[in-house]
Length: 412
Image 1: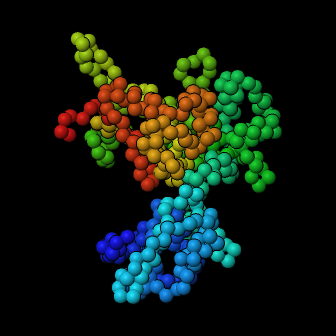
Image 2: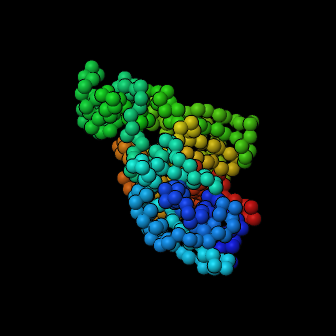
Image 3: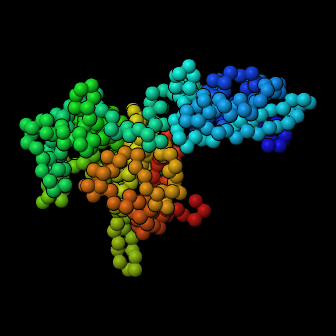
């Protein structure tokens, strides 16, 4: 780091990626700041700088060894920081930059007085992570499967046994217990993670409730889809349609019926799009071609992906299905899991935030065995349909799939 770069950092002050500390800071306080950076996107602590940005220099003996030791004993899992000296910032005053990347093994904890505390960085401050924030970090790391948690207050009777019986008999080609065989049902559902034992009682898991619950939103308010349709190209209060879609993910049907007796969330979403978009007619090679505004196979894939991959630990917000005059958007709450990027998805990266949901939806043939819907269905489907490129937008708190109704005009 050059002195010019250093003074630029100093001028910008503390923020979500930079913290100033004197070198007489307690080891547990420095560990707190490093843990917060590790649990966000990484950052740097400048040792030898006061809170007001003034350079005070360093006086602690064996400073590098002291920092390395606290990173080994005060942070779990232990880390090896990058240390960089900036010499003679002012006459006789050096600064040590302690830099850590976004941690690959989130969440990280500070260990102090035999207590583990998880911190996150919010702007210029480091604070203890809330329970929900901590759960999301564990889930994103793959160390916690949120869908396997119990649903408090729920019981076997809150699952739709008609759908369950159809799943085991028609979909899987097996058998199912009699309706009165409660213990057999509970044992069967525990074996496939649709129920679990909590406080001595067998209760549905979150995945079980999402897939087969009679009324999932009663227990999981974030389990539905909000479907809206606007007349123009931007959100406004004059919506053409605004519906709250809810219910289990899977439908109830029979082997001889093309249309299910009761729709699941996927069919409800596709029906909303069909009711609120018009077909497009055009002449191609002297023939009148009529096609839907959006190809059903692409819509189905995008809706299913949103339902099985969203972060259900984020309460109070549904998936958003929004139709505009020129496009359709599906927004899923939550960031992409660790190591997953948009480029990776386009290349065919396979991942599953909610593996049980993926497994069951694959049994219903909603999910391809390859697990590469973005690469193999959504992108080529839109290109073949109208020559447009679907947009995949990864943000801190949501992921959006945007489909264009028509190619953009030149210069737009």
